[in-house]
Every structure is written in structure tokens, then in C-alpha cells.
Length: 405
DNA sequence: AATCCACAGGAATGGTTGGCAG
DNA sequence: CTGCCAACCATTCCTGTGGATT
Image (cartoon, rainbow, N blue to C red; front, side, top):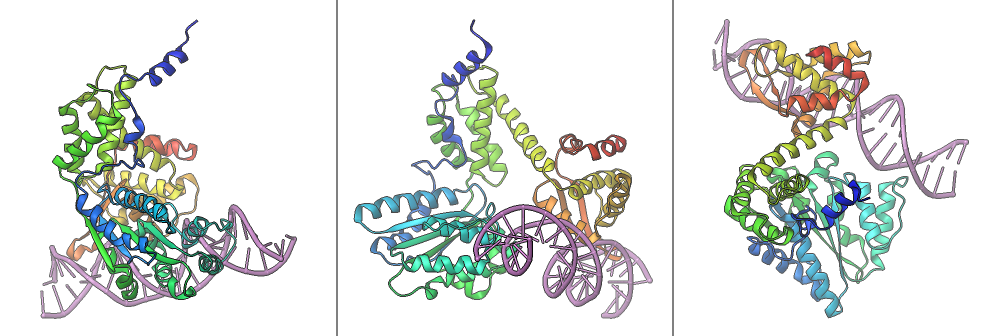
């Protein structure tokens, strides 16, 4: 009896669509990075110092999301380590994404474990971890390159103390021990202004800027990857162009473009279609956005979800196409009472609104209405049905969602 | 030009949780 | 077990501000 599962397994193994889907995954580092030759050269020439067993200058990398900052950096570092091995020089690197590892402690712990130090994931003071790291590094000769991806997150939330410490770690090390250099990656151009002048000058010894890709460049990138990821004849010009155009609209984000292509491919596969079409891409676009919103909203804390409901209700009641912080807060208080939880203060809600704005659930722009005060113009930025469906998952809120409509 | 609204958003501080070391 | 610490969430108190109206 040939069952359904067999069929599904078969379909994946002998995919008509994909040859190697992983090539479209966000963490895949390809061995060719089109339109980033200049950046590879710049990053490479800074870090190449390590091959002479001397400390490369600290490096600061700017560029919007999906402009290849991480890919280029990791690509260069991999090649560098390879070369160092051939030459018998001790070079290694740690990559820390400070958005995922968003506290000084976690960052230090990652760095420590990269030099072979075992550290508990909590319980010690940051000072202690730092001291242990210094001790380990003083026994470790060679060059260590620390990559801090999305450093702006860490600094925004925790300040630049850690960065300051890391830029000065050389002074805490005895001569002849490890040489440490930092690579900071950020997608916020104004980020530098948040830094202490000393950190700024130290971290910015070298700078490389990653401009966004335009639609044409995105097309090249997509072709490059698609030709390896898909079976021949599955993808055509129009599909690639369409993906590139959609992503170019969003400030030339290559990651989005690749995601889009991958999801479109998955859709085609599931439908058992022979080729990927523009229709698949359209559907994929909607799907990606919906999944993201659902995922984000359902993991939000209670008060944040109440704030979203309050925003929707306030907007409907107001008769305008937006609401304000004050209105939102009034509705929020009502809803909180309705489900019997204590309301948080307006100050806190104000921060929650900002958090929701950053997540792309709400859009909140500061406006001044003159005599009528300065406030934020708040609108729902995500698909309402998706948001409500995610909120209604919580039994406490289901009734509120239903009576709201 | 001065006023003043309706908040924005910084700073300091408190309370709670989870997890380590000894 | 106790003492300690990081990490959050939240509160209180606060100063700052763009621009329509006076």
C-alpha cells in the first residue's frame, strides 16, 4: 500500500522545484556576492592585518537590512581564517548578534566561550565574566576578531558601557597576549550619535558603508542564487524581476527578496506546480507578512496586546483614520478593567506603543496639533484580521475581541 | 510674539523572577 | 539553603517641545 506519507516524502526528495533550498535560506553565505566587490575589498584590507599577527583596526559597518553586511563580513572572515591557517597564524573570530544576545552578559559569555571558556549563562556579575575573559585572553596569543552584529540594539537598550570596555580590552591585557579587534555592524545610520566620543573614535577607526541594492542588482543576486537553488526551467525572468521589484520597494532588502523566492518556491511545490509563477510570488508576499504578524502578536505580553485592541477600538470610535496616545490609553484602561487586570501607567503604554511601532504592528508618528498638543498619530500598520486572530488565541481576550466587532 | 496643550521621552528607582555559587 | 546578580517590567517624577491659537 503506497500511502500518502510516501508520496509526500517522495515529492520532497525528488523535488521538481528545488535542487537545494538551503541556498535561499537567510544564513546561507554564498561564495559569490554580486555587487559587493568594493565592500569585500575594503573589509578584507582592514582585516588582513591579522595575517601579520597584528591587530586590525576596529571596523564599523553601516547599511540597511539585507544589504549584505553580515554576509560580506562572515565571508571575509572565513576566508581570512582559512588563509591564516595556511600561514600558521592564529586568527579566529566570534560572531555575536546583539539583537538575539541582547545583554552585556550574554555577549561577554559568547565571546568567552569562543575562546574555550566555560561560563554559566547567568549567575555571575558582568564584571566577573569580563575578568575571566581577560584572564583567558592573556593566555591566548593570536588575533581575535569580535563581530557585533546589530550593535545599535545593544547600545539603545543597555548603553555603550560594554562597547567602551571592549574597545579598551587591549589595555587590560598584558603585552604579548591576544590582540582583539572589533567589528561593529549596524543598520541605523544615526547610531553613531548615541555613542560616547571615545567609543566612537575607537570603533570608527575604519568605516565601510553598504548602500542598498537597486532592483537591477537584486535581480542579479536572485539569479545567482536561484540558478543553484532551483531545478532548471522552474524559474523564469518574470518571476525574478517581480521579486526584485517588490523587494526594491522595501529599500532594496536582499534578504526579503530571497525569502520571497523561497516561499514562492514552497508554494509551487505544495501545489505540485511544474514551475514558479508570479502568482506564487504574490501569494508568498502575503503569506510572509501574515506569518510574521501572527508570530509577533501571539508572543506579545498581555498589556501590549491590550494596547493593540485599544488602538483598534480607539481608531474606530474616533471617526478619524488614526488615534492618539491619550485616546488609546483611555480605551486601554477600559479593556483592562473589563478583563479584570490592573492597568499600567500611561508612561508604560507610551513605551509599549513605541515597541509595537518598531515591530511594525502599529505605526506611531509624533505630530504636533498646535494648541491641541503634541501627541502621536497612531494607526494599525498590520492586517487587522491577522492581528485579531492572533490575539483571540488568548482565552482571556477572546471575548473582548468578539464584542469589539 | 507669547502662550499653552497633550503629550514625548529621559532618569531614577522598585519589585519580581530565574538561576548561579558556595 | 542563603546571598547575589542580571534582566525585565513597571512606576514616579520630571523637563522638553511643535505649532495653532490668542
